[in-house]
Length: 271
Image (cartoon, rainbow, N blue to C red):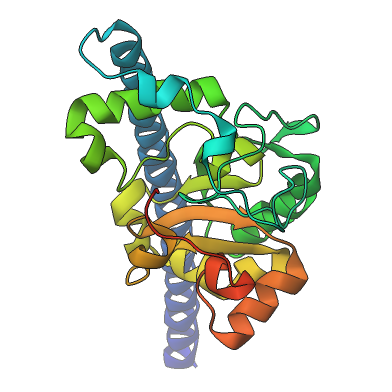
């Protein structure tokens, strides 16, 4: 009887110890998860702050530069760019903007801009953007926006800075001239995640999630690798454009990567 009682006591103590160890491990895992989330958030804040500093420096450099050729950026006659016969209404979600099709007028400003979840977009896109943003967060793949609506004057500063840095030919491979930027429509935004901004974003799980689900909310990645001669730009895994669910899902189903191909409208380099 004594041996049986001792065995029961030992088993009880063992069970208690196992339970305490399990509780400690659970608390440790929870603490590690919180720590990991804090590290990710800190990296994201740091990346966003660095991006903001770079943009501020770019704007200041453009404003102070006396050597940059301002004429090509600050005064574009909209009649000199080949406006498409369709898909040319800047207030429509089916507008096409590329190096051969500038905005009409080039100083166009959307009259329905709304700011939400870190992005300033046209009201025609903001609801879908909020749904995409929340769905990504719920899936454990949150992203944040580094750039959304940019005015004509914003693009003047940005483009002039890159001309001063890389020359006109170099700048034209990755920066739109004022009046030729999708950001000016209020339908496009740039994203980052996991501390990855611009080029490294394509290697993140957040990018993979967007590739699978962005079309469900009406968004497409606008510039893919291998299509530079069609879009006129190098690949930008971080640049997304609202075109509506029907178009986005149809493009995905058909494997069409560019709006130029989908709408059969010329693209490529400037005239």
